[in-house]
Image 1: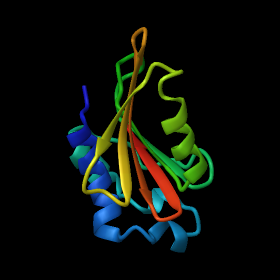
Image 2: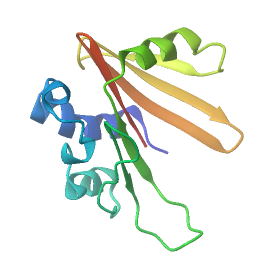
Image 3: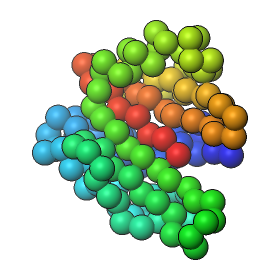
Length: 135
């Protein structure tokens, strides 16, 4: 299971080494913000090159045999509306929200388990933008 610290390590490679304004300056290519090597090192498994599923999002998938469990890391942003929505609907979706200090202007760790599916998402807000990192 991945924890706030693990997701925070991945986030650190993005937000604190590159600067929070990278989203505003970047053309929307989230895959250019972290290298395949950075994601692999932080997750402790080899991942494929990032794949942009939609604008301003990127996904790195563990390289594994078909049918095996795989780790997937997603980077999504910037989306202040989603950040605020997550906070306001947590109770209704049976999610746990834990404040995280020392990241941006406001950060929170979202956790929800539904059956065997677990969602662990770190959300960070800086000024008028927010992004999330999910493993």
